[in-house]
Image: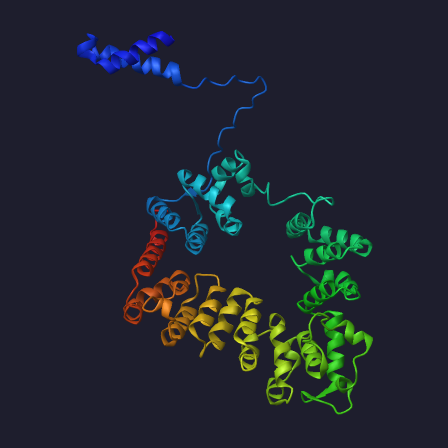
Length: 455
């Protein structure tokens, strides 16, 4: 065989005319002998080899041609917001991704965990079947999202496993934490159990968090205190209410009252230990205000109080407990820095956060507005888009973006509003090639799902 291959190579070098060889015969020998010389051998088939199961039939409607075309373009843009929007639109239309696009979606989910919830919506039966064929795609069927808790693993891996477990069975993690926390001697281990409760936080977690308030390590105590402040109806809130009733009248400190005396041991237990933000009368007022729902207060009295600043700072921390956080956020915006207000907004549900952001951002500078908008998931409502467009129009665009529209506005704003307002956007920001292409793609996305019969 080797000699025949060498002869064939020699004849190829010499040529058919000089070598007096038939052309077709030489090419056939070259193809056959080349594969025999360089082709890989087939692996030996093990006796216990399990064949891949047949793919199940897809019981959901597959994306139509126009929808597939839009997805291909979205994947080419490599924009997480656009892909999330496509997946949400597909889920609403009850369609799943075409078979040929499943491997790329699974690979993206493997590389970017933040995209997994959206991608799971469009995998369908075929996508779940395909995910079982690769360990890198196991997240799609829960293989990697449900890591087993190993008490001998590193603290980071244990916390990840506990948080994943907490999403599916919060009571089991709560019981394990209540059993193990009192026995832990290392600070990192006690921190781990308290941090694990942050997922699916509920009033049932109050006993363990109350226990952690007796921890002498500030990092453990303070995190437990912050979580207790996020739960309505706690004993902490009741203690704070009693102190406020005893120490204030019409949102002003009573002379020689509770807040002009040194805090007792019970109050010190309810104050942050790290830093100096909750020391002195102002800090103690801020702590108490952060522990009760904003509706505890009369807004006009708080605004007129000589202690308005610390009270409003505490109320801003308690915004998630408010029935209507907008008026409280507006009042707090007068005393809070921009980043502190953004932190307060970030703790709110998406719809409420957008209402608060629109209400408080009238005179914000471009960078702060852009940062705040980036915290809002898209697509925004038409009203939110119109209001935030107005904010961006009047804001002074920084030098490095002169002439270019804000990307967050074009990728997350309502498509109908942006399309209608495009002449105005183009006039305000003349350099808009990429941004216009993004908007055009979002219009295609909307239209593709709006077409009946082509999904």
